[in-house]
Image 1 (spheres, one colour):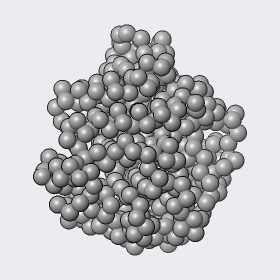
Image 2 (cartoon, rainbow over the protein chains, first blue to last red; image 1 turned 30 degrees about the horizontal axis):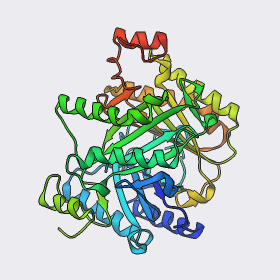
Image 3 (cartoon, each protein chain N blue to C red; image 1 turned 45 degrees about the vertical axis):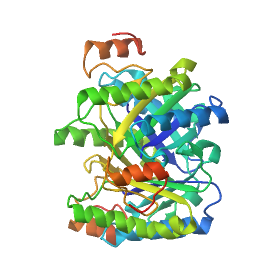
Length: 140
Length: 140
Length: 140
């Protein structure tokens, strides 16, 4: 958690772009105290022959699917802020480049999630702070 | 929204099949007034060595994962109709060809979803009608 | 249902590993009476250049996304047991091999799910038992 799955047209990202994009995404979550290794970002190239937007073959598009597990916000203004933050962070890699861009966030159960065979510590707990500090699934 | 991710065995679809399949899927949603570009369809080939159904390697199968964002129906008869509609539309590309076929729909939050850096207009609003008419994320 | 999507670094699994892994996953669900063919497992290789954990390129990692459809458990102790069971079954293919390992389960609506153009029988029903016995979507 979070898991970012970035489906993109061929040739839109260099290896360096992906590294920078992943770093910026990671910063969204470390900025609110989550352990760095919680953030997983996968890039998946989809050929124009296999990607359609409105029934038209797409060769310059990015479709991002985000799973949020460790944190769920209920307040509308918090959710608005989450979307705006994501939008701002992805812009240099998406809309600013003229790519058709869409993302959505799914929220999945916190109690059906494990890392390295371990139940993650409760959100905001000392255990989570320790995991963030050590950047590893240490005993807590 | 919606996002269709179609995982399929190698060789079951030509480029023309994919185009037609994507068109038919798109029609489900434009038929109820959604902007055409809301509909994203991705095809993902999975080798028999990497796809298992009931523990058996599968070489003639289609597994469809659908994310619905803009519209959630609560009434059981509406949900039944959604499933039946999807089943009917996919049949020519799946069951009618003798492929093992399974789909499921997930419903994700409407308020954590953006396109081209913009919050989509409320479902059924004049803004949405404008987006459908222009088939673009124009100011509303 | 269930759908297991296993994203893994290149070279971590042989074809035989995948077969065994899929068999063991399938056993989790047949053990509680589900039809064998309900269990779909897909392996998806992700290059280090396209997979980042905590912003670092990952070359020895497994990220498993599980969709549960047919069964949802509410009791905390049941959910704990589900996670522990999954963790135990995947260990020989993941943590025991020193791979960075994370999984999460999403729970999606039971009433928006079809197999081979058919609505699956209710969980625990005679129809489901028949499907399990025949290992096929027979009339019920």
